[in-house]
Image (tube, rainbow over all chains, first blue to last red; front, side, top):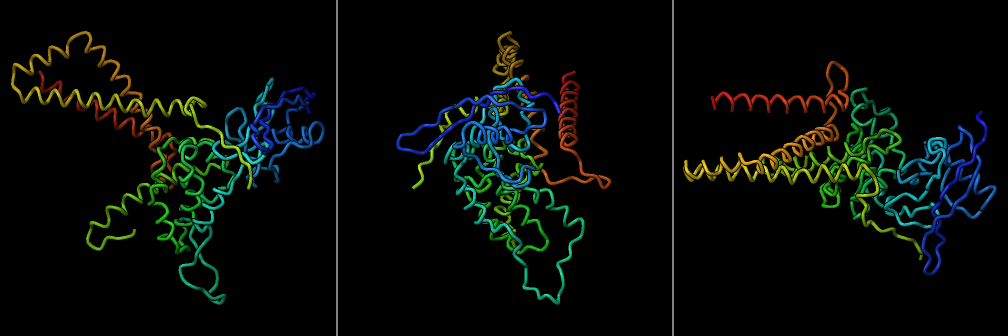
Amino acid sequence: MSEPRNITLEILRYQPAEGATPYFERFEIPFTDDMSVLQGLQYVKDNIDGSLTYRWSCRMAICGSCGMMVNGVPHLACHTFLREFDPGPVRIEPLAHFPIERDLVIEASDFVAKLEKIRPYIVPKEPRTLEAGEHLQTPEELERFEQFSHCINCMLCYAACPQYGLDSKFLGPGITALLHRYNRDSRDGARAERMALVHQDDGVWGCTAVGYCSEVCPKAVDPANAVNLNKTASALSFFARFLPGGGER
Amino acid sequence: MKRTYVRSMDGWWRRDPFFLHYMAREATAVFVVIYAAILLVTLARLAQGEASFGRWIAMLRSPASIVVHSVLFAAFLYHTWTWFRIMPKTMPPIVVADRRLAPWQITALGLAASGAASAALLAAVVALAT
């Protein structure tokens, strides 16, 4: 254990009220080398200002709740250490490109609505009885989607995507990565339905290959790869209609 | 009705060095277009005959033109590098000898192919000119 030192957190506060605007509030807190940004926020909430509001749950980078901007970069607060920013100050803001609901809590209903739309689960190709046994899959078939299945819906990639910030109709990186994960699954039968979302102007074509989404992803999902692979798939599908027997691919 | 606060996107590309690099990548595409236009004018002058082509070549040899071409060349090099750097993000996994190629390997292969193609073209032009 290192000796506790002090660091200043500059936290963007927003309390919804008529005409309210966000403002920065500074909190000086003691920290040790093993303290995450989330633990810093918890220190503030427990000892200085109980009204500070933020989302968190697992503290181990798996629930995807505590995404926020730390010194302007999207991070999971539980997965980012205060020592990296010593001597500070550390500027903490809600995830960029989303409306702020209160303090560090963003309004995620747009993301959730898109998530529902892509049907993020396996839609079986045909009904199967229990007697027929489990769906078998080879290691090669697993390899086709495994990386994209690591997405934890933390939305850091949306906070890294200026195209989403400029026009939130864009389907965006994380949702496309999940869509791709199910489309590539040998057990799934809903690809055509999901590809209809990919083909739209607001589908993959809103992406201009900035690539920052993949840089900030805490799970190495590489959503930019999923989006760009689907641009290729969408373009192929467009041109396939001109071929004999062409159609939805 | 929730009272949410929507932050402005004004000046978004200045907020993060990553976005500045992205804008530089996109902006250097303009230099590529400018060079393509110069090549097209060269073709048009060639079609107009020897005198016209000669005047155009003399102009291209002027110090001002050499400065412009040096700037275009630098922008081209930067654009090429950024183009191949983003290439792994656009490709399905490439498996060689049971191992997936790393992004940097795809970038390096692209740059090497681009360098080889440029060298071959330069050699062909030099061989034709002498």
